[in-house]
Length: 112
Image (cartoon, rainbow, N blue to C red):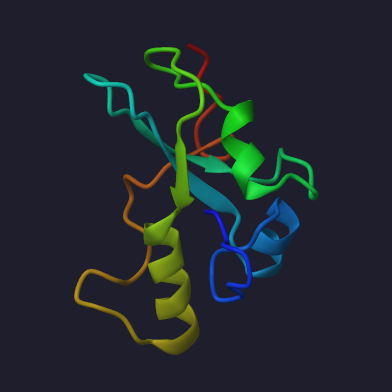
């Protein structure tokens, strides 16, 4: 979720910019060897001015406790949004599957 200098086509640099694009969730992935836990979290609990490179500093893996997980665009929600707006999509796109749960919205916050 980092934008390079002069690269205006990259991901937004603040949570406010994410929300302006309609992105209300992000996927969080724990990079600790042996863990690999993934979760989708709601961005609405974070301040608007939080830059994407500082986003991970506020998070911790709820399974192993590791800090600074990798934060990515929630591609399932992104594909579902494109499909809903345009009807276009790859074979797997469409409405969000029932197993797509968002921490802070569909399930309670996970505490390590």
